[in-house]
Image (tube, rainbow, N blue to C red; front, top):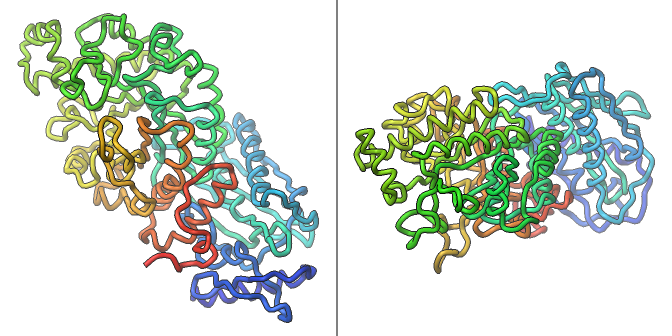
Length: 595
């Protein structure tokens, strides 16, 4: 049935385009056959008009050029209509507190439509008007919740008359409306043969994500990233419907977060006064992200991964200890001293500073790579453990860590004024054998960074924990480059291609417990990356993650390849310097570039 409908679509599409006035004959045209756009020389004597590549791609598979693929009913219709880029109207039908976000999303939509036109070209100003109606059933909602935010939407596109196309987006809140606009922007293409913008009409799409948490982690402490590069990343995330920017903002190498309550941490911890994220900077990022349907999740990683900025506090152990290999996984080492009461006053101040600028529904407490050997260098810590009748062994240090985590957890709740969900990395504390002794599954979400096949995944799921997957064998985007603490390759080589990212299915990994998977996150640790390399590290691989987490399709990367090439093209048009994954010949010759 599907192949027959494709032929019918193309026939009707050609019929519509026959109405366009003839111009200089093109060298090539495309036709759809067997789900592929086939490139052929154009016969100038032919009575049939030439079909452009993107017009062909719009109808030549079930999802056209949409990325990520919709999860519900998807009918892209059978026709393309010419539209006038200067005659697009957006109307908000229900008013409320989210009006400012709705208006910003509308402006972004118009900008995306403009990006469909190649630089240096001006499309014809003829064509139908487009009226976009936004029906937001809960216009006062403008905040995320971890698992309850409804991101679903329905999109209908149909002709109103010979002069007008109507597009209506229905959703239960701003976030669904925003996603619907993103999809609608992908239904508009530029016909480079006829020099017209075209829109798919008679469209029905019902859509919602498979997982509520779809993220990118950016580490801005190992190397500093400009605000412009962070905002560009957020723009690209919005284009593929990722919804969480996880900001790993401090580490042992630097403390660029502006703490007004503890200013010396920033003064002495930042790489320079020009490399600080001020509160105004952070508010700007948070606002920019929210307009694009994205939460900004702050992380203060502790008790390990602290150092620069803490030197004169007398609250750390083994900072920059040598040889570093004996005390931590990379230089400089550093851990907080849990037995100092003053430490928890510092933590409360840091958390309060973060609560002031991050209006978040979740908080990340870090908690990875804690070194027993580091803590064991402190006589003060040893004495404290002995007073509490804890042995200087693995179990004893877990008790010490739990002592820290319990007190730090209380400070987070106090700073944010609520019991918000907390995230921790997998570690010795989260080992499924004893995790429930230390971490309440109702309070904590565990982010898995070990392999997808790690027994910890199934063990934690069986104990009822909710998980976020960042398994390094598929989702660590810093892998596959040269070593920076020696020769050879870095620790998690080889490089991870988009295909492996796409195949990394939470449903397959979690099996019968997949409803406890909140989602996943690509991580870019920044020992070997900064603003100059950011785009290429993330894109288009993060787009592969986005479709996996939005759609969780049962098919593999081969079925997505044609759309992935277009998704990459779309990012480049937005100004994202996404890595090229195939020659352009492959984009023009569907399905000919994989075995």
